[in-house]
Image 1 (cartoon, rainbow, N blue to C red):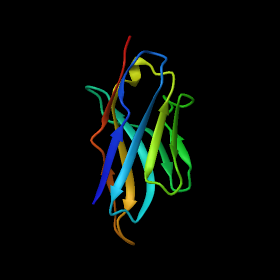
Image 2: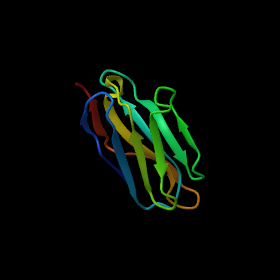
Image 3: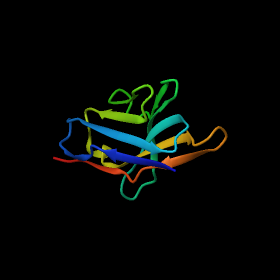
Image 4: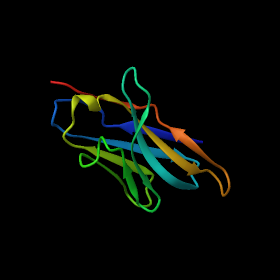
Length: 120
């Protein structure tokens, strides 16, 4: 019903930047929120940042001041600008959206993830 495709991951050195993108497509009636999560090897998936339909944003403490989430109003695309990347940011980054596919039916949908590796 709803597909998410992430892009923009890669290998960077500490202190460098990357921008991730996520495009949602399919039978989308209305998006409630778009969220980035990440999962490092051997660890649980954790919240990174979210933006809701009203453009309100929220961030994990570990990324505040370094990462910026944004969504172009009316487009089913979300970006994650990541600055001052550190080795501890290394993870697979997943895009999630909570979306209505009809007036009353909603669900949580996930992308397959994009790898971000920060290493010198």
